[in-house]
Length: 258
Image 1 (cartoon, helix red, strand yellow):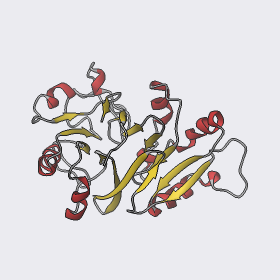
Image 2 (spheres, rainbow, N blue to C red):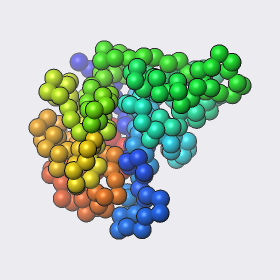
Image 3 (cartoon, helix red, strand yellow):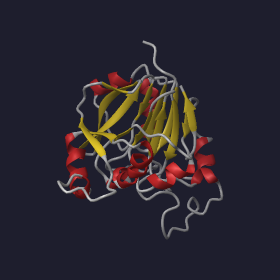
């Protein structure tokens, strides 16, 4: 199957606290390297005609301004945690300039949280200037946004189901520590994969560095980038130099074309 050419921009590659972490003076948080300065994890997926953001983090406004992004057609949510949803209010700027609602795709669990946390957006009385969104409830059924095919993939964030997404030959996985065997089949054949790798030490709900490396090797994806990185992982240059061939650390502003 022929897929549209996609450009993926890493809007953020950090964990829920970001890097540097507030009030921390550790070796990583004091690094002068720009690749060690990580906003909360999110990506922008663009074709020639369509622009999709995966997760609106607390840094969404800053992320959009930093890359001077003028187009937004849809938002895809992975799960309801605040480091992935808190920036939703700022889509209203795109409402203003595009003069249209933004399509927002979420599973029922995330949809429930959005309606609770952003109740004013869904109120019968719409206060002037609130975000204008079309909330689309999704399950594991594939769909298309513009000319970009979207395949939801269920992964596990401890006991919480989280959606990863495959866009053509590109797969994006964040906030996971387990992928069931039948869902791995949806990933196989990808040319590029993004996978969370929080730190070296074990964690209850995220892949460690070694676990992420093992999964990348198992799935045989030729090009893999690690994201959702904490300051506990280490400095970018030192960690990346230790990784196997075909595996790299993502960083804010990185662009991948596929």
